[in-house]
Length: 232
Image 1 (cartoon, rainbow, N blue to C red):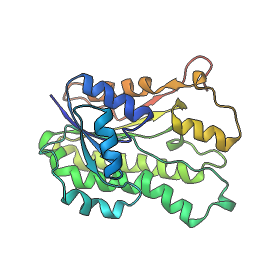
Image 2: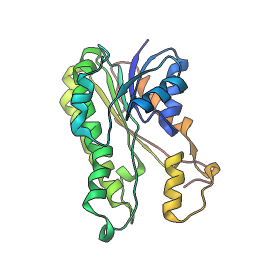
Image 3: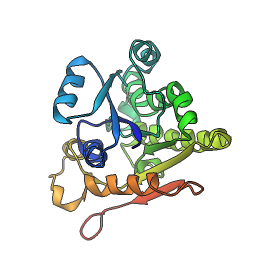
């Protein structure tokens, strides 16, 4: 039975991944932004444990986790949470830049740093659920893509640094996925949202599990997955 720490468990890909791992009988620690959210997640995912830490304030994560009981070992740290705001560079303010980068890049880096002792102990696995925006940047996506490009750099550096400790690192780059975030993106783009056009969250969760379940001695470094059929 493996122990996983998951961000973004409340919806979309994170929720699909949480449900699958619980059904396998694994031990889960779900990161929640506050106590109310932690209670909500614990009620929704029976058997899961919670850790309270606001990813919007990565500078406070160390203090928050120091007041809670952490798992002794972590077999996988799954970074799924993220935020998105769209707009041209000409209109994006420092406040929006800082909020986007804090949640999408600095918080994953800090949470990884704080849990590295447990990951090393387990010879564990860090998975960054990135985005197609981590490989290319389109108009109005500058802040989100910058954070995701940075997340790729974080993963690549971490992989090289932690190889001697047996820690594996994988980046997963989903295309458009039928999630609440995707619905928000469509609103910001002024487009009608049809979830049937996009990948189900369960498909991305299955891709993450492919990396996690690879036998020891092999490592998937990067996985891209995109909608088939009508999706683009």
